[in-house]
Image (tube, rainbow, N blue to C red; front, side, top):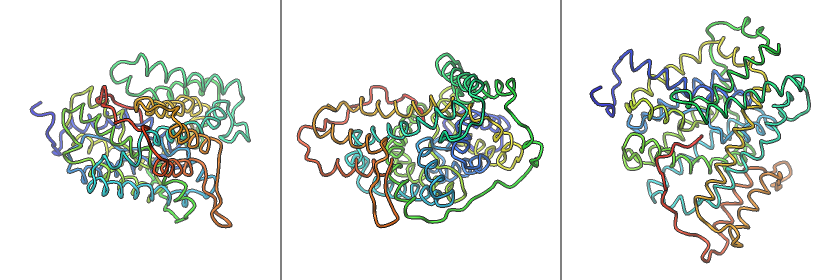
Length: 430
């Protein structure tokens, strides 16, 4: 291998195979988000591939990352779909992508430190915690074989528990003890074991697979603008926008390059935002850089960003396989519930870790007030009326209130300098 860092887009069977492997690593998490939120997994595959290609163009093909479904938006998508429907929810998600674009412009003008001053860990940490905590009842209900709101039983409870706990245990064990490629696919492993258990217990139906065509156009859905959805979802983008910076640092540590400077964090943020808006305009979930794929890059030592082009092409081609989407739709609810228990708990822990690493004293009155209000507003479902028909609440309200309090509350000896990362090359969980 002559230069693993060079960008090479010429056709090589080996590169195409490596690209397919990268997609395999991302596949479980990629399809999990649409399966949980009611979006189409085939559309998610298409928009992940298309979004990755857009990101490569914006970043001049210099960063070896793959973009796909973001976990941070699961809660607002579920709420939005239930409240306003998919098209209106998509308008909020597209606006979140536009929010990234605005941030990229501000970073380009004022630098990344200005963003950190407006959105410090004392705000982003509890917002991330809320994203995980508000979904806890949904995860438990699905693990018990019920619908997400617990209103109907889909699988007998004892069967559901066997399935969900098998999927959960497998995911945990693979993440702890897996070696090589297996360590990179804990979610996919958990889904596979849960599905096999479902087959043994007779809760899987193959009628949808038999009826589906081999090749079909993905079920694209286009957004319908709704202010309520926009104002509810855009504040959720605060947390993943900050995490984006850590993701770019992580892949830079893997490859030994400083992507914050070249092509620049403003370009990577812009690429992420455009990819998210594109995905939402077609009916897919918002995109984010995938740490699983960054881990695969570290494992293979193949740093050529052109490999991600092949991963993107593979995702786009799979999007047109109708039977794949039908197969994914046969995954029973308890399998998803078992994975969600760990996944949403992990999101909450990431938020806690953000606060811990910041090193701020949370018992100082100002810090205590900001964290307490964000968490209780978000988890408790606080909402404020704006006009006769619109109310802003949940994660969106929590994020906006957190930013507002951080800007207006007097700060005397409350903010310590941002600490240096002890290990900036740690690959984070999405």
